Length: 228
Length: 286
Image 1 (cartoon, rainbow over the protein chains, first blue to last red):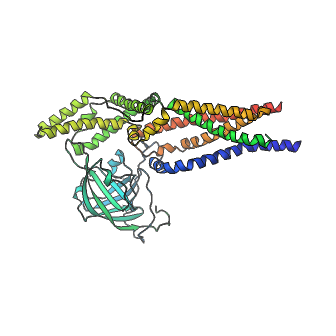
Image 2 (cartoon, helix red, strand yellow):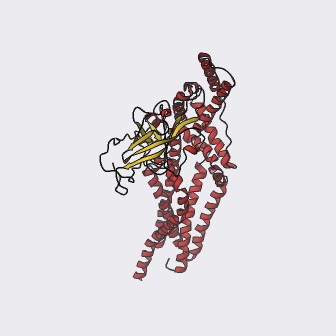
Image 3 (cartoon, rainbow over the protein chains, first blue to last red):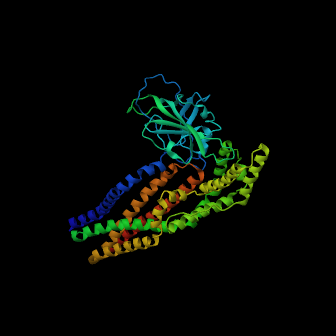
């Protein structure tokens, strides 16, 4: 009688856990497929780890001005480890013959960031990765001299994980609605663009350059962990 | 409890009850909270209109260097109440679309002051700079006016309904939203039926049904509240990648509010589950 009573108590205690385990299992199985489909969109919508802090005013933006390695005297590698930037983070310095001083490059586009430097669209690939790296800036400030870049000029991007050089392949003019220059690509390239001055117009035209990689130097081998 | 013949069906019904409770709560909450009125109130509470004003001001300040049109040409002619009106027109149009075929039809309200301000600036500019007032000038003037409405509209659409409509998301949501009443009634009906079925399965010892209700309510409460609490506690929605103050505020405030309601309902399920367990214990004692 006592054993039966004990069994009954045990079943009473265990049953909610069985139901919970079953429900969790069903939920996981049923969510795998939708999650696979939505993963890309979710990663795009919630792609950074930055959270609201008192320093950001309403927009959720936190600006991080990192020190970028200027001269690296260690061993470099052709393939290596990347440091993925977060939205609002200064992660590269851009220099070329057209600009007098190096231009800071921030990850993400936002009007506040455009005040601070050039911005890289977070829908494009980070510097050094295979694909299209798209960087833009205001035509009256940081990219005022972009039009001076000519085919064959060298563009250098210094990051905390490596130094990357590109050669200007072509110059271009396009309408802002024409997404083909800023779209992802299979080949490695760097796209720099800015607005085209259009007095009394709507500034729908863009000018810029497409560059192809000429040199990649990573500070750490792939798999060695990120360089800070 | 002991008999396998009633235990297995009870487990299955209990699992079904967990999901039906969660679905009913989600659908009911969506039905009650996802309305044009609630979104308008939320936008108003968060001063979205003044945030839009600041954002448009920044946009035109940036544009000045390439277009030569000073931001005040636009900004002096618009104010928070005009922007609030535009923002509400977008919300209303979106809900009309959601109640229909999902296609949004929206027109930004005309603003004579804005049009006059742009016209005055263009003519002043032409006078001062000997700019020829030809067809090209007229075309630029008309284009500036059209573009002003387009720009204001896109900034006022803080929930990005137009983008969703353009990408076919709104028509898909409209199929669900327009049938929300049926969905709500059906999910509640299914929940009640499962409650009754458990009672039928436990007809020989009806008090045991209370234990199963308690189990389902507690599990549903845990499954709904824990992920919700995690999202709110880790401020997950703050990692939203559109860092434009009005859009960011509109989206995050909606998500946090809805998560808050969702957590509250699921915590009440846990409390209800505990009550079922206590009543079951008391009945069993007798």
